[in-house]
Length: 462
Image (cartoon, rainbow, N blue to C red; front, side):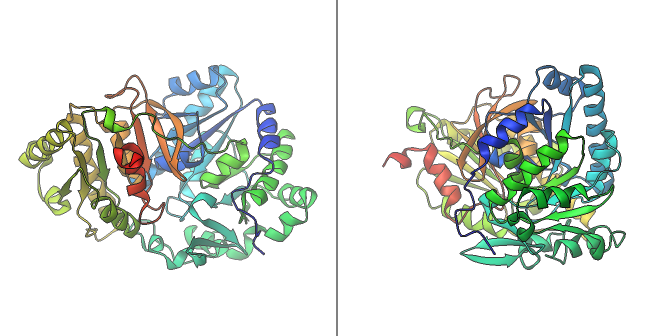
């Protein structure tokens, strides 16, 4: 039975925050795209994963930080190797600083990504050995819940099994099951049978901490448990018990979405509103939409109806066919963007909406990489700092930040609307101090992107 109260209510937040700080460890969230910061604020985001970077955070006793692994943009073998490398660098940094750490493999609340290979590689690289894995894909801010082991997306008050959504038909990460026990069997190619997958039910959670403690304590190495949750209250009850178990030395691997990070650390989201509207700036802003999912397209359509916008479409087919390095198309796009922003017009660059995919997951990823590469090349050459910068799409926003803006470290300021984080660019970046909006492809309703735009512009004060 779903809790009839607000799923975002956080009755145990302060208690959990105290327990988290008493652990005297650093929580490291390894993000397979940059949207795990959807429920965080005032914490670092690292755009690289060197041992030196981790030593700095451990030396400073940073309670929590994110690592942008961006593995969802890679072929499986490269993604697995990157996860292992991150784990090894964390282990080496911990050994040199004496700092305890916990690691979370944060992935998509709609179940796309490299499971289980990424989780296993990260764990083994970090020297954690064989641990039970907790599968917690709930993301309440985006209407993702798990009940009776079935993962749902809430839309318009309806519970839609995630396998019936467009996300399940992803060319690189598709799947057929919403029942997470069956999903685990599917993703492990049958090496873990659905009957072997454990479950912490809503009923177990309702029975109280001792039942949760008993169920979690009974897990053996390499067990997988689906943790059901429909509200933060339920998830927080589980987190209270996890803190008790971790204090006693029990370890876990975690494959989660963004809500678990917030619940386990006792850190809530923080609403962030731009202080200076662009009416005070003579320059225009920049919006780049790379995400092609249906929700992004409907949001883009609403945005393009706004005044003061220059629509700059980008042909994906043209990018695929062209050699970007000497393509006059890039120069033409760049001049269009720069002249728009210089005259106070907001440039909206967007990829063509017809999805072009390859004959295999690897080919589809390669096409995506080429398109993102073009966008990165574009951002690298922009000389004018935009009045604001919104990047739409997980992989798009990651690569623009790290490769285009040369970000090594940013700070999460908060969320401009629920589920949409804003980062402050670091001093090493091309545009230091600039607020950068990381807008996930699958968040919000048709008006949400236009709403974010309004918050930065004079439209918000009309």
